[in-house]
Image 1 (cartoon, protein in one colour):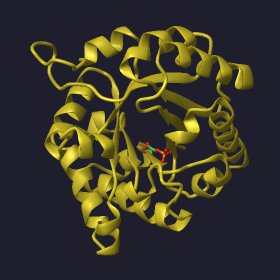
Image 2 (tube, rainbow, N blue to C red):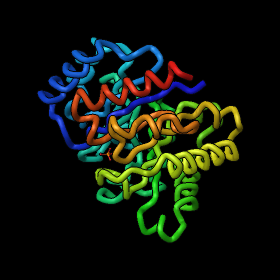
Image 3 (tube, helix red, strand yellow):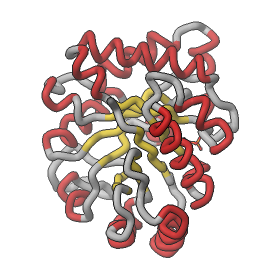
Length: 259
Ligand code: PGA
């Protein structure tokens, strides 16, 4: 069975000092991650070193970055490499978040190059896909997301595929307080899993974790996480407070126990 992954995408919030405070706050509440749930925090690049030190005290809570470059090194001002991320103990990297696609020129092609690079170098990509409100209204959401999944996975071998995570994040639900209904989320997650099965195998599709992202909060986490194909959350706003993030972790833990 797939374990829940509860992931915090801190976006451009929390420098090193606030990172220490937030992680200590999380530690104060949960001590370590519950045994049945995997945790992940993705602070801004400048705070990764601090986070890596703090996380030595919180078992089960992994570290991830919000982006990486697809080359090893060189003249790429402002970028970081997979090796640099590994040096500060990053196990995951968020790739293709809609904000990066919208504001920083990220395309299906650059996302695909980064996904392959991360997998080759042993970092697990959290690939973000999702449709805009216009696309949903035009009933193009399934096609859009399917194409994003296909494009992100070009060149990825079956044996590497089980190391990746996909996050379904409808753009209209990100930071808006509006959430996909559990039924909308389940339908999209099932469609994504089917696509992975078509590209690879049922086995691989059953192993891959598909997270839901877009205004997941303590009050709606249960109804989303109890959907059969929702394997966790990629959480923005609610991951910036120790109590709301740990509340969602507790919801996942309770659901794991009842399964
Ligand atoms: P949100 O962000 O939870 O604040 O909607 C989610 C995300 O963008 O990953």
